[in-house]
Length: 139
Length: 196
Image (cartoon, rainbow over all chains, first blue to last red):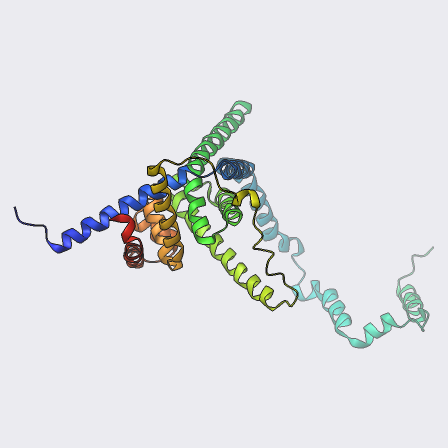
């Protein structure tokens, strides 16, 4: 019988080494004291409670039909909304909004809003103007 | 239909229960080894407990619905990340403390006199021999570079294969093999006397 090759001998030694190390490490695991085991036990239960508290896959996906219906309703409303203003051009419909934006962007207008020394005279004047411009109801 | 919805709830509850049981079984199977791995890296019992606890919670929160076969590499990946974070924080804290003029160097060296007292528990020679070999192995593992230590513990203690170890460590399988080979060489060089 021929002696084993040097490479095979090395592999055998490494294998023995690994086995010995594994046995020692597993032994050291068995020697872990009660305090640590108790802490780990508590940590495990906390983790399981945490997992149970989360809505499960099935429970989450059982809400899918309702969520889909709501999403579809919102989508339909969004698509149909412009049709309720048919006959009015987008520019005309948005005229007031554009004017408001101009006012907000105008630095003078903002100064006017914040001007307290004026005592609100401008607003009183503006209200009077709008009242006089309104058509008479005939009363 | 009430019966259908009742059936859904039952299905949901039974799924949750079986998932909880499987998770409990998995965590019970890995917790002690995970603690040893964390302890070897952090060299501190309470820090190791914190790291394992955080890894358990994170697995439960984020991955409990993944297939059970994926849990082990995921759990060790989370644990390794947690260990790395703690080591970084410790390094930063150490740097800050080293700059403080009023630090008390003896504070951390305070030892519990009861823990230091000699034990009167008679140890049979064989048990003593194993304890010495174990201590030597643990000390030698602590001297390994972090990646070598990590791969050695995952392969030898936890029994992960090369692919699982690579997933847990976030590196290639080739890298795992290289680190493992170097770890074995370093440990054999250090521990030769205990193994002959």
